Figure 1 (cartoon, helix red, strand yellow):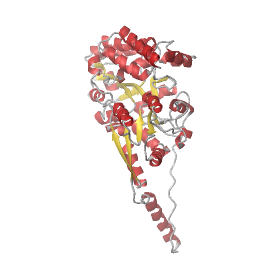
Figure 2 (cartoon, helix red, strand yellow; figure 1 turned 90 degrees about the vertical axis):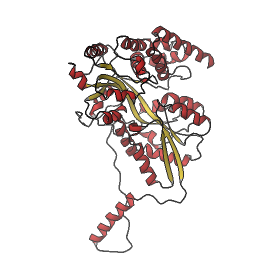
Figure 3 (cartoon, one colour; figure 1 turned 60 degrees about the vertical axis):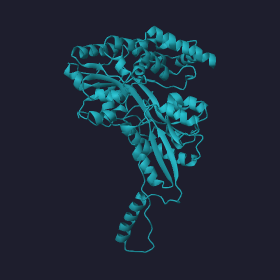
Figure 4 (cartoon, one colour; figure 1 turned 180 degrees about the vertical axis):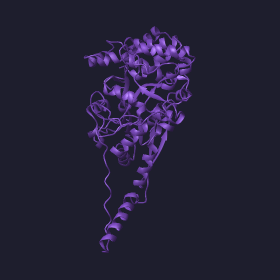
Length: 456
């Protein structure tokens, strides 16, 4: 593999530092001996006792509480989750955590909603941020504002996590959507570096197409890849504007129609497909983070939109590939990334095991646990005292982060009962991939928003 590991001191999301020195564990005190041997024997016995005490699990009271945890991290994307759960179970023999995972593409949200609505929800579950406001409104989640980790989040992260003046889910990472570039393929056709703006991107795609390569592999079974392009193009001007909050407020009331705002992004999707750089019909059957990775790993495609958590899958599928994750090159001047305080860990308000659930969530969001989790996801730490990934593959994305060239793809400032940017972008950009026109997509989205306003 040509990738090099370099320690990256990542800059803060939106100019706030996300990285600090990694915390250190303190060893357990040495056990005291009733006897009084000589000094050498005492020192050796103390060392052995300390090691045994630190390694041994706590004593069980005999009754074991089974805690069910449900999440959308599966396969390679589980990362450190199994190891952390095993560690927790060993340290807490009175609690046994069982994790079940279903991918988002596999219908996680529908299963989660059905379980919660029927009263059969798991004790702890991961929430997709774009659906969390609705789950909070339905009363499915506990307020976790008092959890210890909250004091260690940056101000920006707290803002992203706060919904209706409470924190219904704790963020485990700053997740990043960007664009993967296969440098082996690009170099093969004479391209020396990843594109930095839309003009370079189109030129590179044409070179790849002329060389018989696949310019872009996209996973859009749930609309993800199309939404990455469209949101990066359309919402960047909104977040760069000094009156961004006023614009978002106008979108919530329909004074500024969201379909019109999204038009430039939908036009990008249409152009990439019409020029033959991206196969819309194929993208619609490719599950993001699975089928697209498998196709990209074959080494015949130049680019793939995707998340930082895709890296684990790519490392397994193509360990010798030379690739990077950088910005999405859809703007005239530069590229940008999409960010989110992703993987919100929630406690089911209907759980009868809230004490055990809080104990697990406190462990799961501790400094050591989050450092391990973030490293396994190749993502960025939301804790100001945490350590982010040191994988050089994501260094170009980290540079975009440091330059504050980013847009959140989920923002609680939007009234999701009216406008849900990520969900709406996925739905209507996918319609364009299926052959719909930009005009129809914009019209249909605006009609949906008008109907939403009538119901709210």
